[in-house]
Length: 230
Image: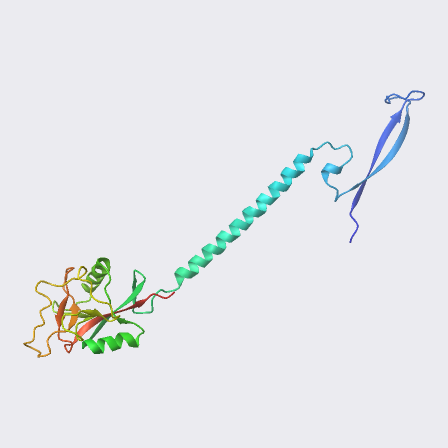
């Protein structure tokens, strides 16, 4: 370990001749004393220093507070950087739109219901399952800008093709009767254009109650969905 640097200082003391009291000027004797002071020595340890010990404690506490403050700033900066990184990552792939923790794809290709479902599944999704009124409202608002003509319809993931009038979503959950958005007089299972009837559901008119059943073989656009990226 390197030696601590030291300082030297000469201090002059005087003593009156024949008197032991404190020295006074004139012809008093003069003596010198050499005092060595290390630079590494704490100020409180200097000879004659009367600095209270509490001052050192306060200094230590202040240093700790400064260190904690610096650490807090660094942590905050790290968290902010992580947040920015997270926000910078796309929640959905190109062509998919995020909403409510899901990604939606609005296909402009007209296909049958089964073909549309295969298309969605090829993109690791499925035809949309509508779970609440807010999701239905979102879809209606988005489809308004994607309809080329008033007759445009979009397949959703609801069908009664297994058992008539037993409506099931593509995830095998039953349709909640209290959460439906059928148009007036729908579903009607009209068989005139197709003897098989109407077993698949589409949407596309510009108001909340926009569902209607149709022939699963009819070509329509479609809405796919899948969870957002984790």
